[in-house]
Length: 212
Image 1 (cartoon, rainbow, N blue to C red):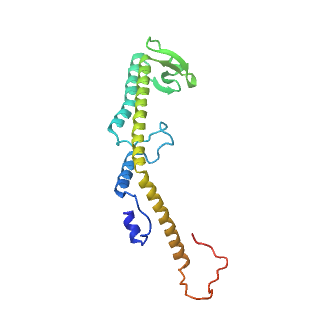
Image 2 (cartoon, helix red, strand yellow):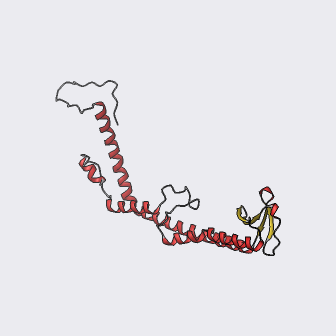
Image 3 (cartoon, helix red, strand yellow):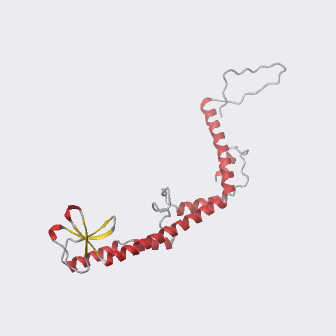
């Protein structure tokens, strides 16, 4: 462990009061298991909690994916309209049924003509697409809420160990200074001088600098 290594290195003077190494180790494991390696700067701007940490969150994320339902719906619409090249696309306003201008318009009551897409492609809305989009938004909101709840739970665990973390930070700062001085002493051949007892001054330092 870190504490054992420090003691072995002869840095026993470093103060480790109020440090709970077992609790800190458990917290580190928990954070590593829960958090993405590169979480977003703000909650809601990306995936923060790792897949596999919360079965409930994993289920909500799976439910918010429309990939399978959209593929099935696309095949149904292609068969219903006779447009084999029909596709479903997502724009700023949501999901659309899209066909090329050459395929001609869709003449079916389920399809409501909307905006024109790139290259003159015709875009349509349907009640089913609106329903799927509303369901997805609801699921995504639940995902965000649960992810925020899990994150706040982790944050509370960190806060509960605040004194121990601060003590560890101070101790590591002392270790950092000691290791830095030891490294310079080894590289530059520094030694601690022996001051002899004398009634008259025998040591004069000119242009001296403190190494730390």
